[in-house]
Image (cartoon, rainbow, N blue to C red; front, side):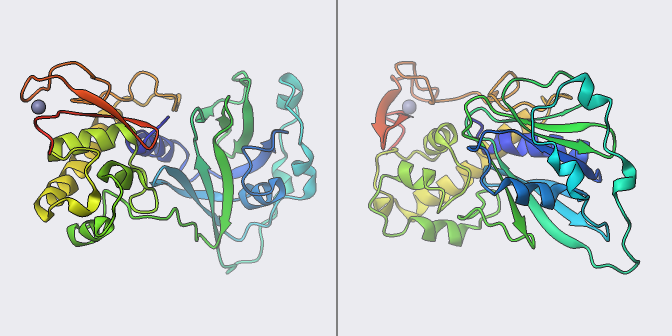
Amino acid sequence: MPELPEVETIARGLAARVTGDVVESVWLGQKKEPLKSPASDITTTLESSRIVAVRRMGKHIIFDLETNGVTPAPAKSRALHKKPQGSARRSNPSSPSMKQIAGAGACPARSQWIVHLGMTGRLQVCEPQAEVEKHTHAILRLSSGRELRFVDPRRFGRLSVAQAADFDAGGVEPLEVDLDRFLTLFRGRKTPIKSALLNQKLLRGVGNIYADESLFRAGIRPRRRASTTTREQLTRLFHAVKEVLKEAIALGGSSISDYVGAEGEEGFFQLQHRVYGREGEPCPLCKIGIKRVVIAGRSSHYCPRCQK
Ligand SMILES: [Zn+2]
């Protein structure tokens, strides 16, 4: 499952490839699960929109869209609601004449396409002749001639749109939050600090691996109640969370190729884990065995000596 650093890497890779491109037409598959917004809303919002930015918010990928005085394409191009048939689809490209330029001075309408990759979701930027993979749920044809495809075998990923660019993922951004705000997130919470770190309503985008690694660096046991952590410990945690995420982003950022993948394949999770997944192995600081406990159904790894 992609965590914040992977999603950040993917968003940066996409931004470099599709910023400035215009969505000419959209094909959506028949499966209902990936569509969080109605299919017609997604199609109407995306078609004829220019991608002005791609960025990460929590674990969501946000495509900021602008419809700059371009009227939406007529219904004809939206009727392509079946699986494309390879050559037949290629021989019938959407005609540029379907777009009409509205009068000068039209106000750009802003909206957003929001992609959550779930467990196995991937966004591919490819040439139209590239074979359409099984489990492809959306294809955006771009004015550059390329296609942006959403592939997701397990279908936990979600596609939605927001008008007026008002999507809010909830929680605060761990890389942007300041110390004072960070401290208030944990105040009075009787849950284990690990659960609080994973609570997406508090911090958005911190997942299991990076929570364990951050707690190790901060010297805090995962089961420790959030409300009993000291200001000093939380200050260390504040820095540790940012440090771990930034290191992982720096490592992931160099691994993206033309194929934008997100299945935890090579290139991701390159960060050298100090405790995560290392039960029984020696702690890198004190050499005693790393322990594993289950907290709220999630494996948690820690050093019983270095973490209090
Ligand atoms: Zn240790």
